[in-house]
Length: 435
Image (tube, rainbow, N blue to C red; front, side):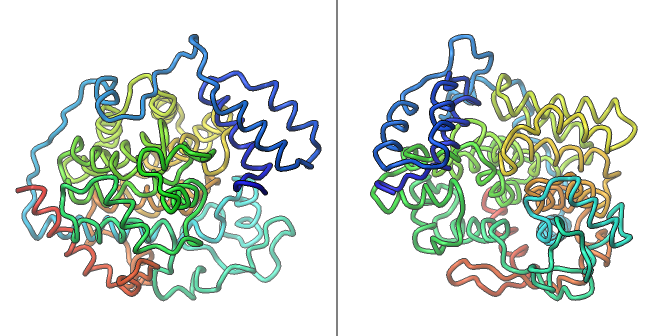
């Protein structure tokens, strides 16, 4: 289509505008009337009409996209915590975070994008519900839950390393940036790192749009906005982890690093998702109190944003409900209308997995992944937090041994990695942040 516009992109942009508090029902009706057929002129005209629309003055949320205003809108928080880990303990905790992220990501890969009911159906067919290990391979899955097109080395009994996945590319890419540019990196440095280190066709949704915008000469934050209907989706949130790893005990600094990264491709709640989880991971090196970790994460994002409201509600429901599935019912009833790779619904599912984990890696990542939606992303984030709390030595062999300390990525110059080496390099970068 002319000027890189498609009908699904236009529909996504209209949905995005409505979620931001803009009135766009009229445009939604006009798109529906096109019946799946739209000329380039139609697309350009409709986009020109939706683009300038602003949130209603009655919209109850305050959602800035610049760091200074985000900080003015955040609640009180500790900002920095006393870190009491020896160098060896810090290395074990960072290694645990990398391993937990790998395990959670790999667990979620076979059913990425699936709804909760479909995941349950295939697990029940396999006699593996509730999930307690990597997904089993089955030769006769239900017709609507067939994952036999997935590589066998994503499945129990055939795993021998952490396979390439964009959720694991980004922490590797972040580490590469820290090693080449240092802790004073800018959003422009992040953008340049993408262009020189990531293949365009192996980035998705908001990142692919932003990548194209960078090639066209747009710099952050414009790269995040121009014709990017995915700017509040989960792409930035999955890039949070390394910033928490290198700022242990310093949630404010972790959130700032996350902001610099997120501003290349996201706005508003897309940015907040990365800031929230970076701060939570930073706090996980100091406390194992998940309620406190969540409160610390929330203290780094605007108090009156949709994401903060969803996380607060989810944490409350988890405290009220004795059963994780009932808490998840409430989450999906309230936030299930968001796209399956949106920040808000997936963040809430991640909170459920954490709150019912008993600080154990297996229950955390299994309950998160059984929640459905963007399962490799949510499983990875949950695993990262539990791994940071527990450390590598405390993680069960069931999840860790199949990885064989090996991670593949598509990052230029870092395609084959020992996970333990990545952890050691991360600790060196953290040492500079700690002074």
